[in-house]
Length: 280
Image 1 (cartoon, one colour):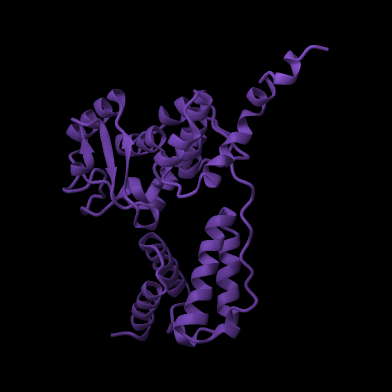
Image 2: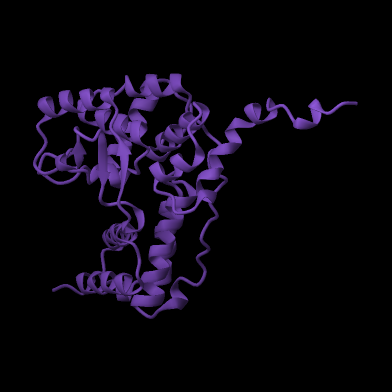
Protein backbone atom coordinates (compact mmCIF):
# COMPACT_ATOMS: atom_id res chain seq x y z
CA UNK A 1 0.00 0.00 0.00
CA UNK A 2 1.33 3.41 -0.97
CA UNK A 3 2.22 5.88 1.74
CA UNK A 4 -0.29 8.44 0.44
CA UNK A 5 -3.08 5.87 0.76
CA UNK A 6 -2.01 5.27 4.35
CA UNK A 7 -2.16 9.00 5.05
CA UNK A 8 -5.66 9.22 3.60
CA UNK A 9 -6.77 6.22 5.63
CA UNK A 10 -5.42 7.79 8.80
CA UNK A 11 -7.05 11.08 7.93
CA UNK A 12 -10.40 9.31 7.60
CA UNK A 13 -9.95 7.67 11.00
CA UNK A 14 -8.93 10.94 12.64
CA UNK A 15 -11.92 12.77 11.21
CA UNK A 16 -14.25 10.14 12.63
CA UNK A 17 -12.54 10.30 16.01
CA UNK A 18 -13.10 14.05 15.93
CA UNK A 19 -16.83 13.36 15.44
CA UNK A 20 -16.95 15.16 12.12
CA UNK A 21 -20.19 14.77 10.17
CA UNK A 22 -20.21 12.17 7.38
CA UNK A 23 -20.62 14.88 4.76
CA UNK A 24 -17.65 16.81 6.16
CA UNK A 25 -15.49 13.68 6.16
CA UNK A 26 -16.33 12.97 2.52
CA UNK A 27 -15.62 16.56 1.50
CA UNK A 28 -12.29 16.66 3.35
CA UNK A 29 -11.18 13.36 1.84
CA UNK A 30 -12.20 14.45 -1.66
CA UNK A 31 -10.26 17.68 -1.21
CA UNK A 32 -7.12 15.91 -0.01
CA UNK A 33 -7.32 13.39 -2.84
CA UNK A 34 -7.24 16.31 -5.27
CA UNK A 35 -4.31 17.82 -3.37
CA UNK A 36 -2.49 14.47 -3.44
CA UNK A 37 -2.95 14.22 -7.21
CA UNK A 38 -1.72 17.81 -7.56
CA UNK A 39 1.55 17.27 -5.66
CA UNK A 40 2.09 13.70 -6.89
CA UNK A 41 4.06 12.53 -3.87
CA UNK A 42 3.88 11.14 -0.34
CA UNK A 43 1.71 13.53 1.67
CA UNK A 44 3.98 13.28 4.70
CA UNK A 45 6.90 14.53 2.57
CA UNK A 46 5.12 17.50 1.01
CA UNK A 47 6.90 20.78 1.67
CA UNK A 48 5.26 24.09 2.47
CA UNK A 49 6.14 25.42 -0.97
CA UNK A 50 3.94 22.77 -2.61
CA UNK A 51 1.09 23.55 -0.21
CA UNK A 52 1.35 27.24 -1.14
CA UNK A 53 1.20 26.35 -4.84
CA UNK A 54 -1.96 24.32 -4.19
CA UNK A 55 -3.47 27.24 -2.27
CA UNK A 56 -2.66 29.56 -5.18
CA UNK A 57 -4.22 27.07 -7.58
CA UNK A 58 -7.43 27.03 -5.52
CA UNK A 59 -7.62 30.82 -5.38
CA UNK A 60 -7.72 30.97 -9.18
CA UNK A 61 -10.68 28.56 -9.37
CA UNK A 62 -13.31 31.25 -8.61
CA UNK A 63 -14.45 29.34 -5.55
CA UNK A 64 -16.72 30.86 -2.94
CA UNK A 65 -15.18 31.68 0.43
CA UNK A 66 -17.01 28.74 1.98
CA UNK A 67 -15.67 26.27 -0.61
CA UNK A 68 -12.16 27.72 -0.35
CA UNK A 69 -12.41 27.52 3.44
CA UNK A 70 -13.35 23.86 3.20
CA UNK A 71 -10.19 23.07 1.20
CA UNK A 72 -8.05 25.05 3.63
CA UNK A 73 -9.64 23.38 6.64
CA UNK A 74 -8.94 19.97 5.12
CA UNK A 75 -5.27 20.90 4.70
CA UNK A 76 -4.98 22.20 8.25
CA UNK A 77 -6.58 19.06 9.68
CA UNK A 78 -4.35 16.77 7.59
CA UNK A 79 -1.07 18.40 8.50
CA UNK A 80 -1.79 19.61 12.02
CA UNK A 81 -3.73 16.60 13.30
CA UNK A 82 -3.04 13.54 11.17
CA UNK A 83 0.56 14.14 10.09
CA UNK A 84 1.65 16.15 13.15
CA UNK A 85 3.22 18.89 11.02
CA UNK A 86 1.27 22.02 12.00
CA UNK A 87 4.12 24.35 11.03
CA UNK A 88 3.49 23.58 7.35
CA UNK A 89 -0.01 25.08 7.44
CA UNK A 90 0.31 27.63 10.25
CA UNK A 91 0.24 30.42 7.66
CA UNK A 92 -3.18 29.43 6.30
CA UNK A 93 -6.08 31.67 7.29
CA UNK A 94 -9.60 30.43 6.74
CA UNK A 95 -11.46 33.06 4.66
CA UNK A 96 -14.63 34.42 6.17
CA UNK A 97 -17.78 33.66 4.30
CA UNK A 98 -19.48 36.69 2.90
CA UNK A 99 -22.91 37.60 4.19
CA UNK A 100 -25.30 35.06 2.67
CA UNK A 101 -28.13 35.82 0.31
CA UNK A 102 -26.55 38.89 -1.30
CA UNK A 103 -27.54 37.38 -4.64
CA UNK A 104 -31.08 36.17 -5.22
CA UNK A 105 -32.55 34.35 -8.20
CA UNK A 106 -35.95 35.65 -9.20
CA UNK A 107 -38.72 33.28 -10.22
CA UNK A 108 -38.22 34.37 -13.80
CA UNK A 109 -34.51 33.58 -13.66
CA UNK A 110 -35.22 30.16 -12.16
CA UNK A 111 -37.66 29.45 -15.00
CA UNK A 112 -35.11 30.46 -17.64
CA UNK A 113 -32.35 28.51 -15.91
CA UNK A 114 -34.27 25.24 -15.68
CA UNK A 115 -35.34 25.59 -19.29
CA UNK A 116 -31.74 25.97 -20.49
CA UNK A 117 -30.37 22.54 -19.60
CA UNK A 118 -29.55 20.29 -22.54
CA UNK A 119 -29.55 17.19 -20.33
CA UNK A 120 -32.82 15.84 -18.90
CA UNK A 121 -30.93 14.37 -15.95
CA UNK A 122 -29.38 17.65 -14.82
CA UNK A 123 -32.56 19.60 -15.51
CA UNK A 124 -34.45 17.24 -13.20
CA UNK A 125 -31.66 17.24 -10.61
CA UNK A 126 -31.65 21.01 -10.23
CA UNK A 127 -35.43 21.24 -10.53
CA UNK A 128 -35.56 18.95 -7.51
CA UNK A 129 -33.11 21.12 -5.58
CA UNK A 130 -35.18 24.23 -6.27
CA UNK A 131 -38.45 22.44 -5.48
CA UNK A 132 -37.25 21.03 -2.15
CA UNK A 133 -34.32 23.16 -0.95
CA UNK A 134 -31.97 20.17 -0.73
CA UNK A 135 -28.20 20.48 -0.53
CA UNK A 136 -26.38 19.07 -3.54
CA UNK A 137 -25.05 16.13 -1.52
CA UNK A 138 -28.51 15.29 -0.20
CA UNK A 139 -30.00 15.34 -3.69
CA UNK A 140 -27.19 13.26 -5.20
CA UNK A 141 -27.65 10.49 -2.62
CA UNK A 142 -31.41 10.14 -3.02
CA UNK A 143 -32.65 6.65 -3.72
CA UNK A 144 -35.88 5.75 -5.48
CA UNK A 145 -37.15 4.29 -2.21
CA UNK A 146 -36.93 7.74 -0.61
CA UNK A 147 -39.82 8.94 -2.77
CA UNK A 148 -43.10 8.38 -0.91
CA UNK A 149 -45.91 9.12 -3.35
CA UNK A 150 -48.58 8.01 -0.88
CA UNK A 151 -47.49 10.47 1.83
CA UNK A 152 -46.40 13.13 -0.70
CA UNK A 153 -42.95 13.47 0.90
CA UNK A 154 -39.32 12.73 0.13
CA UNK A 155 -37.19 11.22 2.90
CA UNK A 156 -33.74 12.74 3.35
CA UNK A 157 -31.54 10.12 5.03
CA UNK A 158 -28.15 11.73 4.41
CA UNK A 159 -28.70 15.19 5.83
CA UNK A 160 -26.02 17.42 7.29
CA UNK A 161 -24.97 16.24 10.72
CA UNK A 162 -26.53 12.81 10.06
CA UNK A 163 -29.99 14.28 10.69
CA UNK A 164 -32.91 12.77 8.77
CA UNK A 165 -35.89 14.83 7.69
CA UNK A 166 -38.70 15.03 5.13
CA UNK A 167 -39.43 17.54 2.40
CA UNK A 168 -42.69 17.90 0.46
CA UNK A 169 -43.28 16.08 -2.82
CA UNK A 170 -45.60 18.34 -4.79
CA UNK A 171 -47.84 16.89 -7.52
CA UNK A 172 -45.91 18.77 -10.23
CA UNK A 173 -42.55 17.55 -8.94
CA UNK A 174 -43.79 13.95 -8.69
CA UNK A 175 -45.09 14.08 -12.27
CA UNK A 176 -41.76 15.39 -13.52
CA UNK A 177 -39.80 12.80 -11.53
CA UNK A 178 -41.89 9.97 -13.00
CA UNK A 179 -41.33 11.23 -16.54
CA UNK A 180 -37.60 11.65 -15.89
CA UNK A 181 -37.25 8.17 -14.35
CA UNK A 182 -38.98 6.41 -17.23
CA UNK A 183 -36.79 8.28 -19.68
CA UNK A 184 -33.44 8.04 -17.87
CA UNK A 185 -33.72 4.69 -16.04
CA UNK A 186 -30.89 5.45 -13.56
CA UNK A 187 -28.90 2.61 -12.02
CA UNK A 188 -30.53 1.25 -8.87
CA UNK A 189 -30.91 2.29 -6.14
CA UNK A 190 -30.07 5.88 -7.11
CA UNK A 191 -32.50 8.47 -8.35
CA UNK A 192 -29.62 10.23 -10.14
CA UNK A 193 -26.62 8.17 -11.24
CA UNK A 194 -23.55 8.30 -13.44
CA UNK A 195 -23.09 5.98 -16.40
CA UNK A 196 -21.12 3.58 -14.20
CA UNK A 197 -23.85 3.39 -11.58
CA UNK A 198 -22.42 5.77 -8.97
CA UNK A 199 -24.19 8.72 -7.35
CA UNK A 200 -24.15 11.86 -9.46
CA UNK A 201 -20.77 13.66 -9.52
CA UNK A 202 -21.02 17.07 -7.84
CA UNK A 203 -18.37 18.73 -9.99
CA UNK A 204 -20.01 17.57 -13.23
CA UNK A 205 -23.39 18.75 -11.97
CA UNK A 206 -22.00 22.18 -11.06
CA UNK A 207 -20.48 22.51 -14.53
CA UNK A 208 -23.83 21.65 -16.14
CA UNK A 209 -25.47 24.31 -13.95
CA UNK A 210 -22.95 26.98 -14.97
CA UNK A 211 -23.49 26.17 -18.64
CA UNK A 212 -27.27 26.39 -18.24
CA UNK A 213 -26.93 29.73 -16.44
CA UNK A 214 -24.79 31.08 -19.27
CA UNK A 215 -27.28 29.84 -21.87
CA UNK A 216 -30.09 31.50 -19.91
CA UNK A 217 -28.22 34.80 -19.90
CA UNK A 218 -28.07 35.01 -16.10
CA UNK A 219 -25.25 37.34 -15.12
CA UNK A 220 -24.75 35.87 -11.68
CA UNK A 221 -22.54 33.11 -10.31
CA UNK A 222 -25.18 30.39 -10.11
CA UNK A 223 -24.42 27.59 -7.66
CA UNK A 224 -26.54 24.69 -6.35
CA UNK A 225 -26.78 26.51 -3.03
CA UNK A 226 -28.21 29.55 -4.81
CA UNK A 227 -31.17 27.40 -5.86
CA UNK A 228 -31.56 26.30 -2.24
CA UNK A 229 -31.58 29.98 -1.28
CA UNK A 230 -34.20 30.67 -3.95
CA UNK A 231 -36.40 27.89 -2.54
CA UNK A 232 -36.33 29.42 0.95
CA UNK A 233 -36.68 33.01 -0.24
CA UNK A 234 -39.62 32.31 -2.51
CA UNK A 235 -41.36 30.34 0.23
CA UNK A 236 -40.91 33.22 2.65
CA UNK A 237 -42.16 35.71 0.09
CA UNK A 238 -45.21 33.49 -0.38
CA UNK A 239 -46.03 33.66 3.32
CA UNK A 240 -44.61 30.35 4.59
CA UNK A 241 -43.75 30.47 8.29
CA UNK A 242 -40.02 30.81 9.06
CA UNK A 243 -40.15 27.86 11.45
CA UNK A 244 -41.47 25.57 8.69
CA UNK A 245 -38.73 26.73 6.36
CA UNK A 246 -36.19 25.90 9.08
CA UNK A 247 -37.46 22.33 9.24
CA UNK A 248 -37.48 21.95 5.45
CA UNK A 249 -33.90 23.22 5.14
CA UNK A 250 -32.67 21.02 7.98
CA UNK A 251 -31.35 23.92 10.06
CA UNK A 252 -30.86 23.14 13.73
CA UNK A 253 -31.17 26.79 14.70
CA UNK A 254 -33.75 29.34 13.61
CA UNK A 255 -30.88 31.84 13.51
CA UNK A 256 -29.52 30.07 10.41
CA UNK A 257 -32.88 30.43 8.67
CA UNK A 258 -33.36 34.04 9.72
CA UNK A 259 -30.80 35.19 7.13
CA UNK A 260 -33.58 34.99 4.55
CA UNK A 261 -35.63 37.71 6.18
CA UNK A 262 -33.39 40.49 4.88
CA UNK A 263 -34.74 40.05 1.36
CA UNK A 264 -38.16 41.09 2.58
CA UNK A 265 -37.20 44.61 3.66
CA UNK A 266 -39.91 46.13 1.48
CA UNK A 267 -42.56 43.94 3.06
CA UNK A 268 -41.28 44.69 6.53
CA UNK A 269 -41.34 48.40 5.81
CA UNK A 270 -44.95 48.09 4.62
CA UNK A 271 -46.13 46.73 8.00
CA UNK A 272 -48.30 49.30 9.74
CA UNK A 273 -47.01 50.15 13.21
CA UNK A 274 -49.62 50.14 16.03
CA UNK A 275 -48.28 53.58 16.89
CA UNK A 276 -50.04 54.91 13.81
CA UNK A 277 -53.39 53.92 15.27
CA UNK A 278 -52.96 55.79 18.55
CA UNK A 279 -54.87 59.07 18.86
CA UNK A 280 -52.79 62.22 18.40
